[in-house]
Image (cartoon, rainbow, N blue to C red; front, side, top):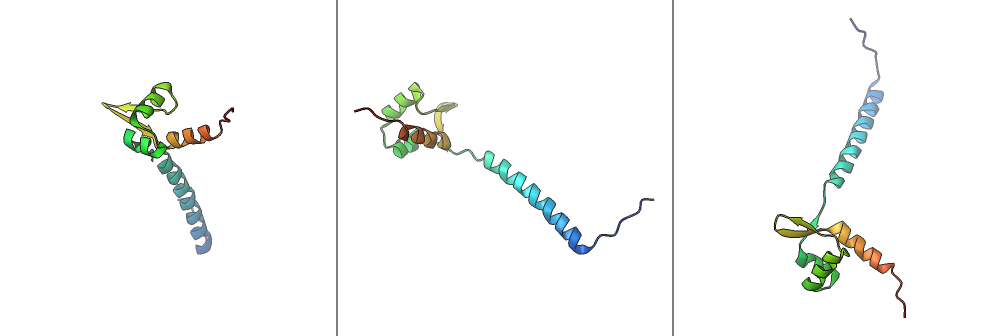
Length: 94
């Protein structure tokens, strides 16, 4: 027969809380990674303040990455916003 060790209630509570906290943090990271938000062509054009033909041109040239899901084109919101940040860092020549 194995012998059970005696542990006080406070140590047990702290141990359980610690394990639960670690597991919740792991679940939170996994949940954040699975929350990819997709945008339509109209939503991206409005967000960027451009026309649909311009968005199509930029998609073809690789300026804004796009994905075909069956017959529809979708954009990952984080990638679109990342493109905006890249554009802001370009220095224009006069």
